Every structure is written in C-alpha cells, then in structure tokens.
Image 1 (cartoon, rainbow, N blue to C red):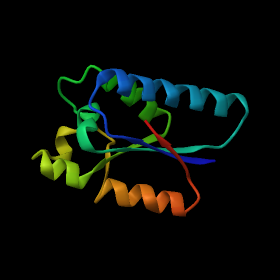
Image 2 (cartoon, rainbow, N blue to C red):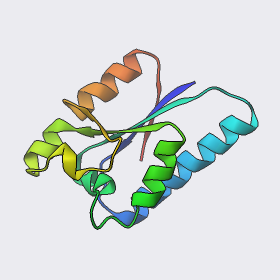
Image 3 (cartoon, helix red, strand yellow):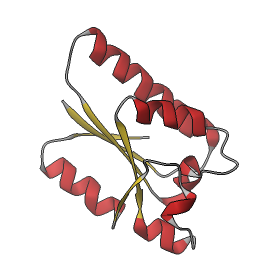
Length: 115
C-alpha cells in the first residue's frame, strides 16, 4: 500500500488532525501486518509544520519520521518564503514542485489524501 498526503494549511489544528490520521493509519497497518509506504507533501502555508526552531509539533513529526513517514517540502514553497532546507527538521526531504509530485504519485497508483 502506498499513500501520499497533501497538506497546505498552516493552522496547527489542521496539522494536528493530519498527524493523528497518520498515526492511526500506521497503527492499523501494523495491526493488519500491511506493508505501507507513506509520504507527506508539505507546501503552501504548511511549511511551518517542518520548521526546526519554534515548532510545537516537531516531536510529533519526528516520531512519525522514525516510523518511516517521509515528509517532503516543496522547493517552490521554500523559495517563496526565502527559507532553506537546513531550517527544516532533520530527515525532511525536498521535491521541486509539490503539486507535480502529487500528480506523479497519483499516476503511479498511490492513494491520495488531502488534509
């Protein structure tokens, strides 16, 4: 099973809901012994979810990264906010254009979840 999540909201409530969904998904996959690959594409206003400094959700993100969830930030978002990948949490990956990556994953047969 392969699933890609999209998040564009900078609101902590929305981000917390997505992190909870990811936790529940991983729990169910483990309970049913289902192999799962999960990516989260972060773009738009959601960039703060992956900030290294001053991020109240950093521990939750890192615990999901420890469970093999890949968090990917859009290079276009970084550029528009004048941010560097080094300002993001360790293990944060990067894609050139978030929307293109999402479309590519859907064409490859990945399930798509918008948060």
